[in-house]
Length: 171
Image (cartoon, rainbow, N blue to C red; front, top):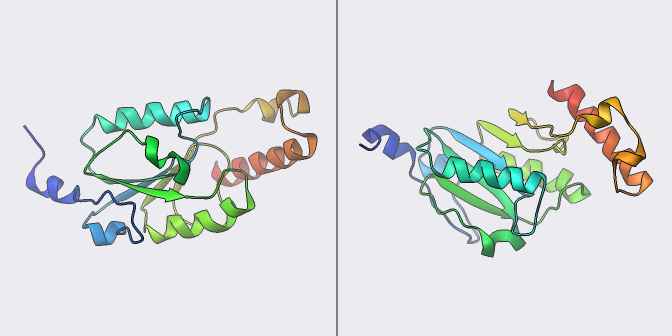
């Protein structure tokens, strides 16, 4: 049982919410995978629930890489997953915001990630690292109508443009 010594060594990671949290390199990890889990939270549904199920499954596995999970600062008290190979980075940027576009590329880059998973098309346009994007709803590609959303029409149009941009640059 258990992982070989080199894999255990790769798992060294610190679970910290202080002013300085170590980067992947400082933690001694060889590979760093990030997950933008800002949709996660105790009251979230839809994409947030999908993120929670993915995290719950990953939590049961012995992963050969360190996982850096970015969650909203207000969700930190509700975080249920304690894992020695995971690092949680609290952030204040809400999804679909200007702050997301400015702050998140810097946050992701600061962790020196080898790969980032973003669970929706709201990829910060200035992030230049490797990433995997999950597009849950492609209905807007086939039927781009405001009736497909409960957002205000101007916000819907912005969301539609953002999804088209992400699809063009991700696929």
